[in-house]
Length: 323
Image (cartoon, rainbow, N blue to C red; front, side, top):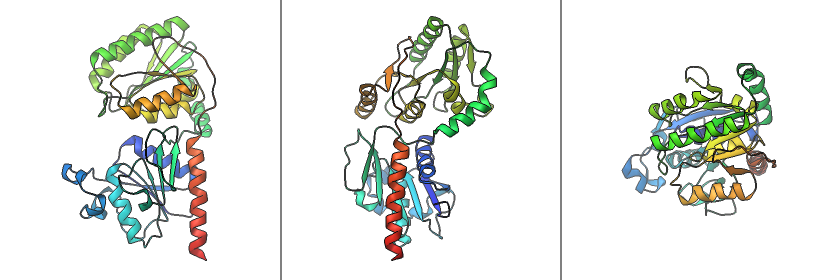
């Protein structure tokens, strides 16, 4: 597989890109990242086949031959470019799209959707969690690199993964203070400490509230200057608290097999509610309300499962072409 050329095509959102790269790694592919422009308002109402010049939409990496053997895309804005590349290659580029493509799934070789999505088909793979690149090997390496920086903090160590506002959920100062209250209560109750990392979506004022409030307990708070210790926190923490706005972060936290508490930001849409409810019903996550609980579960391995399916289908397709 390493000899095959693989492109990852997205609009550049970290959550989408991480899913594509994680899947490529699970298949056994090295990938080149290509980013395309986000569609303007009028284009969103047109079928992707009618978007003008999709092969000229790249903002990172050229969309030009030689065409890749495999293309993994995610996000609505990547669909037109992916379909154009498949057509330009004469159908030789094996295409995989993650999330609903808003075209017939048969336009791709495979489509991967979460189980709370209604799309189904012969070439549609359904997952419980978002795909990601968190593996046992990466966690072990991150633990070796990062463990010394937090060895002074009392256990249990609570990793706190903070997202930010999106189309469906809005962070507010009130929410940040509620989160701070509950995190302080949890750290004090168990006699442990907090290790916090935020995202670009968190916002400076929201981050400031958390940083100042959480100084009341033993604390590591990522300063944003050095490399994000995200994987390191997942690797060495005893338990994880993650905000509900990011399915990707929740999915990555669940890959550790550690207790994962979900802090609800509120105002979730139907798909978010179904996603969280399914994980809670399966005994994988629990809601966070200021108390740390302990439980065990089998970590979902959706990325590995999908990677195996993609690899098998790709090998079958190439075998047919070579005949």
